[in-house]
Image (cartoon, rainbow, N blue to C red; front, side, top):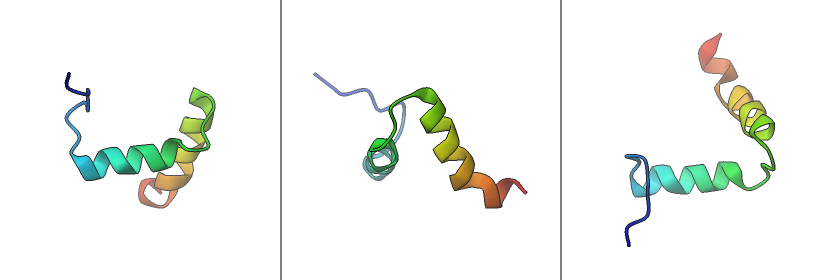
Amino acid sequence: MKTRTHGLDEREMELVKLLMVDCKSTGDIQAKLKKLFAGTIE
């Protein structure tokens, strides 16, 4: 059985796992992504 990766490679999936460690809700995910990309969006 193949794991769904949504087109992400192994390194990208590892990054997703690291980002998800402390997330308990979609709000947590959104807050973390907002902080992560804050400098690039400005």
